[in-house]
Image (cartoon, rainbow, N blue to C red; front, side, top):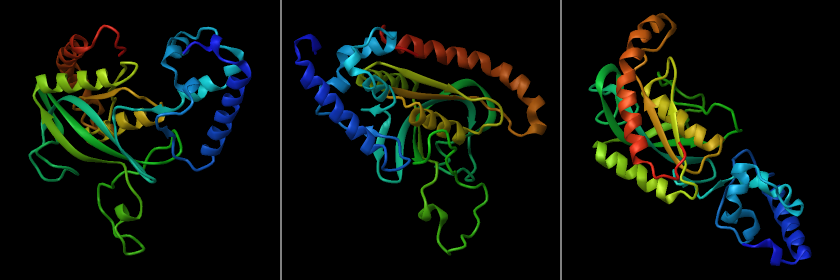
Length: 267
């Protein structure tokens, strides 16, 4: 939209009304905003996205609107559900962890992965639930050992917890196809690739990737790569050869991702 043809008084009035609405929305609680399709085009006009990215000159009358644009989830392609207490995120993943055969995982063991080292890369997709909380605050997760609640109720029913709801393995070609679909669906063709560090299990790596998407906030495709760190301070020395063994599988995966990206995508 060309603002040169718009009456400055009208734009200023619309901008003031928008800022007032944003202030009111900001008082509702700690949940970060997810705005629906707007009625005021000035705030979401894609013509000005290059201005935000390149930090170009901004019209003085629109000062303050740009920051709200950057700090808002607008049509995030990875969000599959949003309610008053929690959100659900779709996270694509790749890993050189071995598949879990036991039933101790917090999700379907047929889709889970442990800390065994493999030379090949497995692909998949997961649904992650995140409770609403203050930005930067770690979400409450399921305890490793389930304890009885003081109220006699299931803690998961008292408040939503950060958890992996489901995990599904994908052939490599289906992974690339779904990644490309998410990139094409996002307005700015962005991809966030999260690679964790020491002492992070598979489930936590997926939760962290979704948490980044919520906290940044990020509107594009979310991808997590999980390598088989052994976890724990006593196992730190064991991670060095495992980390080295994980380089080649990760390089292979990274090449797959780069080859899948359209020319205008940002990783």
